[in-house]
Amino acid sequence: MASLPITNQIRLLRFQNGEMTQEDLAQRIGMTRQTVAAIEKGKYAPSLEAAFRIASVFGVTLGDVFQYDQDADPITTKQRKNRS
Amino acid sequence: MSFQEKSAWAVMIITALVFTPLAMAFFAGHPLPPTPRLIGTMIGFVILIVISQILIGLFSPKSASAPTDEREQRIELRAERVGGFVLAVFTIGLVWFAVKQDASRIAVLAFLGLAASEFVKRFWQIVLYRREA
Image (cartoon, rainbow over all chains, first blue to last red; front, side, top):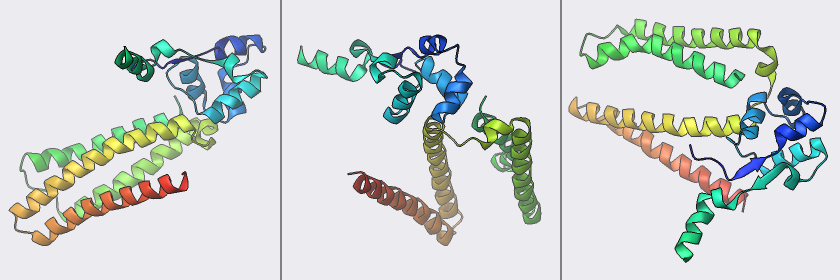
């Protein structure tokens, strides 16, 4: 499976928030622990709604939690190649 | 492992155990079990599935009572698409078999089933596109 162009700081934010467990975070955003683990590992990109919920739990902005890597996005990479 | 994944493992294993002998007999051209036994197999299959879900729920009550989240729903949709493809392949096989056996009503019914499935799928797709437009 191709890696997602979205990285995140969830592990760090959990650490900074009293070593919050994946289970705690999952409960607070209405997801399973497995889904939180998948998001954290970059294997699953959550919906915008879920992403906002995660940011809200940590009291930070969306950009503090998730980062977009344009070079790792196959769609924009393909468009750039077509243009050049 | 989440409840949904445990449940998927259980259903997959039970399905393989219950239906492999029947599939082997069918594809090897051996005599098939009588209808009452086939009905018994179906009922037994449903009972085993229900028991497995209860047992999984008993051993992991927390995850069993949790609603499915967006990732699980997406996984289920993708898996259903593959399952739907397999069902369509078997239905086409049924049409071919029924035509060969000169059972044209069964062939037409199976063919209509495929057509109805495609119609409902596209109809629902349009409804969802319109609703979210």
